[in-house]
Image (cartoon, rainbow, N blue to C red; front, side, top):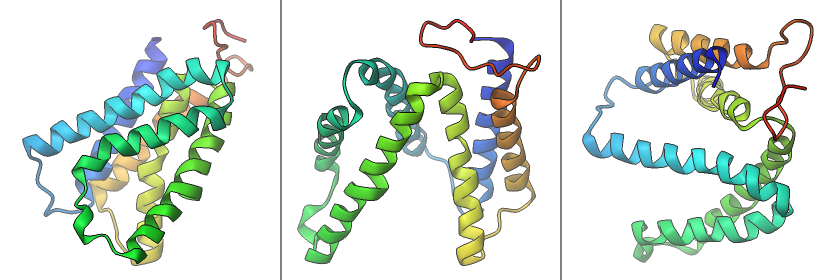
Length: 178
């Protein structure tokens, strides 16, 4: 990891933390929340690392045909199925389709063309976009710390995507600069 990438990661992680913590003053950190957050982070990071390997070998639809149901099975014991209504099942099926399957499919296309570290850093725009949508749709404002966090995320993303020396710093699969 280069110094530039380390700075981008530090900026985006700090920014995401500020956006998340600044959104609701009643939110309290607990050991369980931190542990589940770390589990989610490891799972999400594994998508970039394993995805890069498997997307080179297999078409993305095939990878997701196996990966998404396996992920759902792993989470199934954590769900209270007794309260699931037919309307709930329709929502579950909808969420399994366009918002999940298609989003990952499109993202995997991008991951084929971009180095995993850069893709992961750019993906940290997600909480910033979510905060902006929450403001636009429900009037939920972040507050000063949240906006400062959003600015840090944007700075980290810009650091990874800007051109250096007139050339883009996209790295190939072997790690050499193009």
